[in-house]
Amino acid sequence: MKVKYKEFALEASREKSLGGWSALYYTIYTPTGYELVSSFEDSDEKVKDKIEQLKEIVDDYLVNPQNYVEKTHFDK
Image (cartoon, rainbow, N blue to C red; front, top):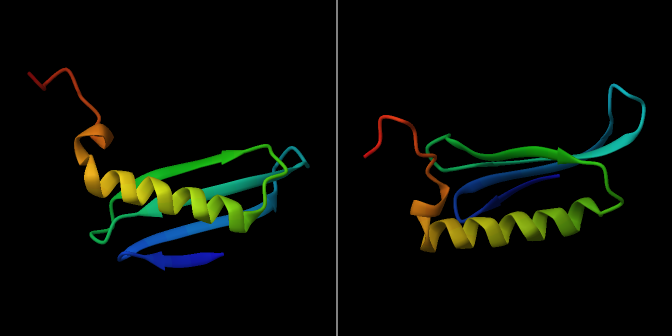
């Protein structure tokens, strides 16, 4: 399922993994194309419910973007 939410591209799908079991894959892209979240899980969660969780992540990102920036050894 692909959804646009506040200009962010959300995607969640249930697919067969290479190991043969069902996995839930999900991604969030910012309006500029930055991959904010990309992962998968072995769960029985519905795709629609995962999309709702992704919307909550977008809302949090818009309020607290500093929490989503990975620090490197170059940062002071």
